[in-house]
Image (cartoon, rainbow, N blue to C red; front, side):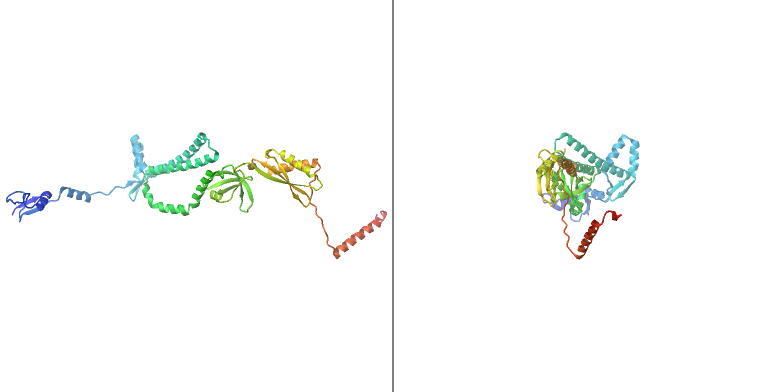
Length: 391
């Protein structure tokens, strides 16, 4: 019985065409299988190598956690062997977390990248603001809006630069995008709402730095203040007594706001004055206008006016209307100055400022009648007594 060795190609050919290409069988031909022959199958060279390679493939080494750490280590090592050896020692002190090696060198580079990113964003936004103020001729509101947009862009660029330097794969954060969006929806809803509200307020110029608006404290007492700053979360308003109110942007956008300098900075204020019924009201009106015109902060156009407001219990009531253009400097001091000058003018021109007058009616009763009778008797007795007898 013949024994032959056959490779994969010849064995395949024999199975597919056992009779040969011409369909005839020739005894004694080499390479032709006969019934009863012993066949030794040999594996294909490629199959065995692949299996061996697969079986002996080593585990993947742990990767470095910070991309910039390796690049910086290689760059420094080429420049200085001493510093490079120090970095190698720091990089050797590492712990493995999952598939990453976190070394002391990685931590140093991570902190340096974070600090550099924050410094770049902070100083970059400041330089952008200075360049915007020098190059452009925008008004204060548009410049503030442009500064906010530039700040957002610069910080966004710094964030992505830091992500790239640290070698963080953004696709790995896709798992947390749903939770982050949920956190924004619930926890940061007011913060993002105030941010958008501040941008809208700057875009429509309804409220801008320098405006004077009326505000109310927790007790409901209304006062006025000047807007100093429109921030990301709130608007800073300073009153005349140097109290600073921080009002959320959203409140100023959805609630009613009394803006004294929205379309014009001219503000009219009232000064009430009362004169006696015995005084010449025409002359008193002239003196009121003279006192108002003599104040430095009172505008000459539109001019002051005097209205007769009504007849009071003890005086004829007037109201002096004056216009000012700087309400942030206060309105109480203007009223005080007008009344002070009017006091001197009334005194020099014999115009009386009356005191309150009241009529008292006493109801008669027995005790009051006895008191009145005793007083009259005492007065009569005293009048009949001679002056010498009193001694």
